[in-house]
Amino acid sequence: MIAIRLNTVMRFYEFGIKPIKTIKPLTPEKARLASLKNGSERAKKLYKAEKERQNLIQAQRKIFNLSRP
Image 1 (cartoon, rainbow, N blue to C red):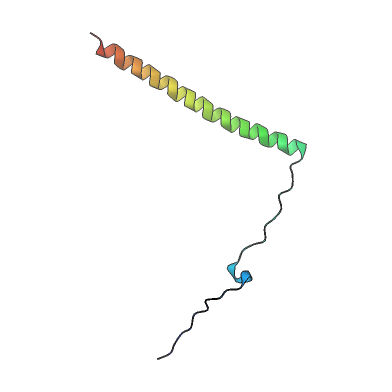
Image 2: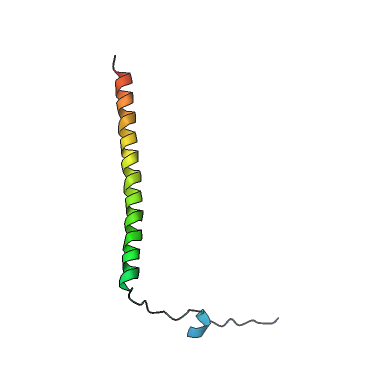
């Protein structure tokens, strides 16, 4: 019988972890574009939430009006 011995000790470079890259600060132009992009995404979500809220209220009013004699 052949015994296979597993290597239980790994060296750091064997993990395949890439070195961490530093994040450079954005230039003013890029920072402005990033903030506008984030703002537009946030505005889309708020618009969608408000539209759903209004649709829910409208449906509740219809149900209430139909349930009254």
